Length: 609
Figure (cartoon, helix red, strand yellow):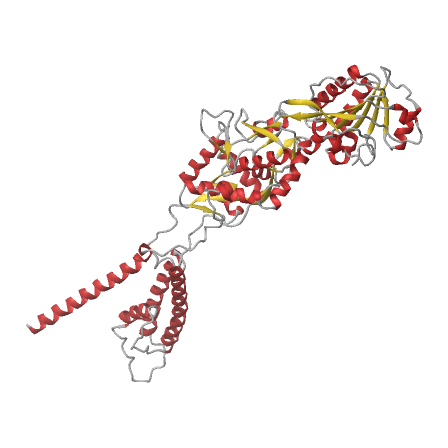
């Protein structure tokens, strides 16, 4: 971009509102395709107000940047330079978010008459201000020439000792189309020219950690936020200071439509940007402007392992539910009685003169043996006498083969792969679970998503979250400690971002993460609404994200470097306690066999005597 093409030529002629300019300046502006304004300082004030508010409201600095390039021709240099710079600085403070004119506008002041005295140093926040000395108007009146010439240009340049006028070349041609702004405005390639930015932060696990020391002032933070802004400061040439909001919370909309906490300071333009990234929501977008996304994460459900999952040592009884065993016992008793009846009742034909055979005296014992031995897959030497009894006996074998095969298969799978019993597997089960309470962080992205969702499950989750809240919690740090206590107490679930979950798992043991992700989010740095700095920072943030620097800093400071995964179905090692029922059954069999053997030996000795 050159100095003249697309710039605005401002001709300050006396104190009149719209004085006619000379034909020479008009022809020169037309030849250079420049927008010509012939105004007084009062009219320029209105024009700058309109330009500033338009650019800020539309938030399109890259499109309207040419409108911020000015060549100012003043008939009087006594108050023109200081008056306009004061005016521009005021517009920046009132409308331009303290950044629009300061960093994005360029001002070249020229005098249509020969002037040998340099204007005094001016106190202004505008970065790019230059003054052309000894402008020779005769060369402009010569139609063969199409440019103003000057002996040299003085630029108000930032130095280590302050603002000073610095000469840029001699001689120079300030209107040559090949002359760029950078040659006249060296400050333009120095980023923010050492400006001190105010960055509001709060402690956030693994991202921004406060250094607890009463001697450190201002407040000092380390971890990712420190590395990030050190890199940005070196690239964009600025210094910064961390501050904290008076109300140590992330911020939420109050009933009077204002905002509290960290977001409140950004919304009120009390800080230049936030040092901690936020999720993008429609409600927040009405009061802040977001930068390029610098981090992607996910919200998941965290809870503590229930204490009474199941009786650990009853592994032999864990294959079926209690109802199955009850029905099995009832079926065995029914089989005993039915087999006895079938064996004792004779409904067949009888020859004349012959009596029926008396029933076997051992049918009761046989029915008990058949009902017990068949499920144990034991053979039976006795063959039922009646056809109905044999049919019943056959199908009793088929039934027991199926049931025992299922039992053995379940027992093998339980002993081979032991999985924990989870209280809920998805959000729907969590919403309907009456034993578990729920918490979501105040002012978080997930709170906004759950609170304003029309989904019935989300509405149920929000009711559970509201019911478990205490109204006196204001500080985000105190809220975090409250979450720790609730999780330790058990029967409580927390929806949090993965980075926070990883840190909490280092403090509390026996925590579990529900399978699946609640929601994925992208995090960005908030700036004041329509702040010009957002575009300036986004370019560098994009580079840091693409080259992996942001991801590297996150891994560097991560408390838990393992990826968050579902632990509810993780395979656990088998312990002796889980096999205790099998050991007890084996011991009981050995003791019973020993008792029978001893009894038989005693009876044998008694018979000999």
